[in-house]
Image 1 (cartoon, one colour):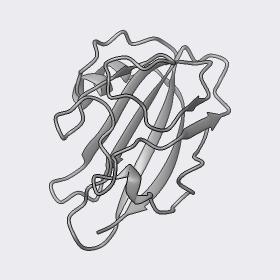
Image 2 (cartoon, helix red, strand yellow; image 1 turned 90 degrees about the horizontal axis):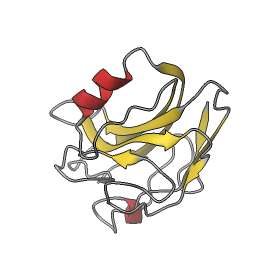
Image 3 (cartoon, one colour; image 1 turned 90 degrees about the vertical axis):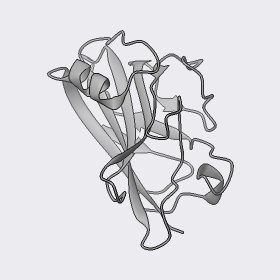
Image 4 (cartoon, one colour; image 1 turned 45 degrees about the vertical axis):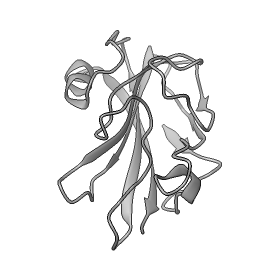
Length: 151
């Protein structure tokens, strides 16, 4: 699958407004080449360069397989208008939490999109461990977009 954004080019910089230094607004995302066998989609945004290990910024699951984009500034609610449930990020909050690295070298942020052969049905607010356990064995395709941000 191909993942892209009107806001972040592959390997490009996050705009400040999409980070903790700005409005903490989720960026526009779009995707293509979703397999016909997909029943739902999962989106995970994380920072593998965080000092304490991988830091999760956004968890979103049960996105309907027919959906092909998320508008910017997704509400930080349990359910999104287009469908899908949001989990707790490593800030301890529901929904998107933008890049917020310590000063120094820019960090990499990966939007990973998974097409699943099932609908997970997890309750909103679940954490990453619960999401990954539920996904196990159900991914039929994957795509990613990486952006950078430094302070």
